[in-house]
Amino acid sequence: MSAVIDTPAPSHAADDGRDRRPSFARLVGVELRKMADTKAGLWLLIVVAVVTVLVNAGVLIFGHRDDLGFTDLLQMSGIPQGFLLPVLAILLITQEWGQRTGLATFTLTPHRGRVVAAKLAAALGFVLGAFVIAVAIALVLTPLTGHGFDGVTANWLGRLFLGVVIGALQGFAFGALLLSTAFAIVTYFAAPMVLSIVASIWTSAGDKLAWVDFGSAQGVLFDPSSPSGTEWGHIVTTSLLWVALPLVIGIWRIRRSEVK
Amino acid sequence: MIKVENLTRTYGAFTAVKDVSFVARPGRVTGFLGPNGAGKSTTMRVMVGLTSPSSGSVTLNGKRYADLPNPGRHVGVLLDASAQHGGRTGREVLAIAAQTMGLPKTRVDEVLALVSLTPSEAKRRVKNYSLGMKQRLGIAHALLGDPEILILDEPANGLDPAGIRWMRGLLREYADRGGTVLLSSHLLTEVQLIADDIVMIGRGQIVAQGTASELVAGAGTYVRAVEKDELARAAAAEGLVLSPVGDGFRVDAEAVAIGRIAAKQQITLIELRPADGGLEDLFLELTADTQRETFTEGVTA
Ligand SMILES: Nc1ncnc2c1ncn2[C@@H]1O[C@H](COP(=O)(O)OP(=O)(O)OP(=O)(O)O)[C@@H](O)[C@H]1O
Ligand SMILES: [Mg+2]
Image 1 (cartoon, each protein chain N blue to C red):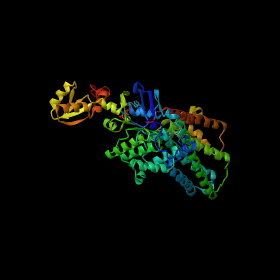
Image 2: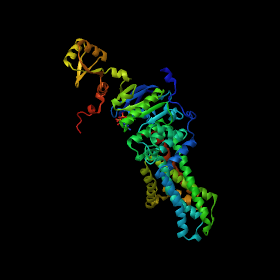
Image 3: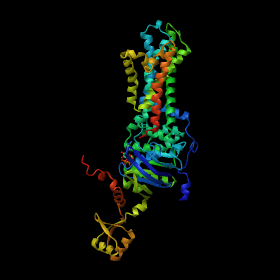
Image 4: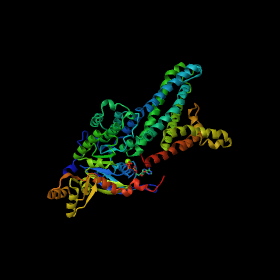
């Protein structure tokens, strides 16, 4: 029987890569695929694209074309995308728990931090894709508007993109923290609302609340005018509080928790 | 080879797995047997890093699971066949795993054929799969990377008798080619049919382990005769005690010893075989104090 013991089990059809750890790029590819290969995920992607087109078309049809320009169109796209991309980012994470696919994912890639990083990269990939679509649509439609490319700067484009990215990252962080689709989505949308309500009632604390009020702080990124130093400060502190902190706790939780 | 050493896993004050040590060897099918809640799944989850041990360790071919660069190519795992995204097709589930492991697409078709899922079934979404189809898909998933080790939690769940026989053949052949197979079950007969080695666990602790034949040998012989009383008397004269079981007797002796006595005394035997359910008795006995029934006795809900 010792001969048997020394023989590797079955005949190995493809021995290459047997001891090669899957590259990060491959893991990102798998995560992108896992978003698009389910009905829910695929529809979400389709809805992001379709709604972006519809919003732009709607503004052109029902708005005053002469008062519009590239910046307005792109800002319009940012509204539905600001809602949908965080949901996409949430799903990327929570699917593994809700559908229990984590069992397969984390046995094939036992280093959970790598999986989370790949998912994060995939989320950023989707955000970039959506942004490119929005820019492309705006480019096509701008000649029909009165203001054209007035006020468009690389800085402003960058800020807009940053705003969408931070929003998606926040969704991702909430997904990682809560590991439940419904819970994460509700929290994602309810938390800033609650904060705004608190801010509007508790006016005496307004100045201090600005440092934690995510919605207001990040909203500034979408304005054409450049944020002030204090406003940048608000953006940084709210991002740390609402994005970095839940993300760190979430990753810590994912790495230690039992997958079953 | 799977080597489990002094594995303990606690949940708060509750110890789900307590100081478990055993080895599953290449070329053999090891049955991991235990009643519900004994800790089989927990032990298996620890093996593949889904649950962290409180203490103790597991190595697979000498390495910790997390240290395997491409674990799917060395260890095939089936823990729960229903843990798949219902919205994906069976083929897609395998394709994702193949992509992660860096396998060619053709491998997906190979394993689909191996588990007898037809191309049209493979195109269906997993939520529309029958229990048995899910199980086959799970087995295909485990076999995908052509691993040397298989870890299967209740693989026969949901399979029909033909399916169970097919799986038995598959695992047998796999082990005969030098693979290590560890499968869990709470059904003794199932394990008896396929396992070379048996590890029994009850309430988190190993209660018996050895080769199946050793454990069965300990169970004795079952005998049925026309002249019952004469057989009992003759056996007693040889110092053997017959304990009545159903229509016949169970006796702690080899079949040949009973046969000789019968031949000498011209007793007509109508049945003589290794005690059926002998292992069952052993299983029930060994786990008696760990069993749910006993465990909850006296607790009136
Ligand atoms: N996260 C947890 N928290 C508390 N107890 C747990 C947890 N996970 C498992 N257990 C307990 O550990 C024990 C062993 O469970 P396990 O799933 O390993 O049993 P099993 O042998 O696989 O049983 P079965 O044959 O029913 O599948 C059970 O009593 C279970 O309730
Ligand atoms: Mg179990």
